[in-house]
Length: 387
Image (cartoon, rainbow, N blue to C red; front, side, top):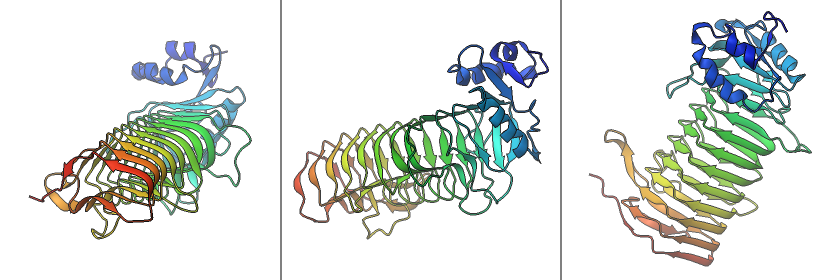
């Protein structure tokens, strides 16, 4: 293979001038490529015709690179730059690898920016079984209406597990959801950020997911939302904050582990388990911190709460910490009105939680509904007095 070939194996990348003076970046990119067997190839987006200058429409060049890499179950590497693009379609068993240099304020490093408002999304994962997206910043540039950052769009579930991985990505400023997954199963999302999108940070319809060590911040609806069928989710060590509606919303879900997360300054509930035609069942909620929920809620409504448990079955809620408050710097409204709002529970345990200044009006509010075998005790705390 000649050095002029658009395909570069990892040895050639390490030896060549792909990254020029930024060759130190390659060690970071190689972390994302370690899952590929020796001898497989990585295609450079720029050598495939993409400009990455933030001005040129790179859609055709990038889609061509993705399709070419898919023939060898290979990868496309994005050197740092801004790649202006319309909707791209990810292929099975293929990887997109970038340099994750984004920060809270916006993207950096390897950035894909939405070029126009005529796309359903920027990156379409509908046919992305076994794919990896690692180290990219996706910027929606606030274009259009209901355009998603990454999107799975199906009318029925696939016959096989999706098994795609999203790692170290930032998805920000899309008019729709940051990540909209419709009818997916078996996937992982780690070390990523979903922020300042018009819809949800992550909108899930599906099951069997690992959602670990992510940031869901400042989205127009929920940070994480599952409003249709959903089950078997491990949601651990995430920071979920300042979303305009619930920080985390689950409707009729089954089999969740919600552990070790930081939920801060939700517009409505910090965590809401809502009943639809089915109750939420078999949830473990433990070791989380809920702070200042209900910022935008009517203080007389149940939405002004740290946790809402509505007709839930088989829920364990233990070892969590709750704190009321207002915006940073001593500004804004005090919230929430209620600590834990519950009703219609069956076979649930709510115990050993700490609500020191956990809410303004009531630490626990029972809204009725003939709870059965609900154990709620040993939850020390006191009301918050604004000062």
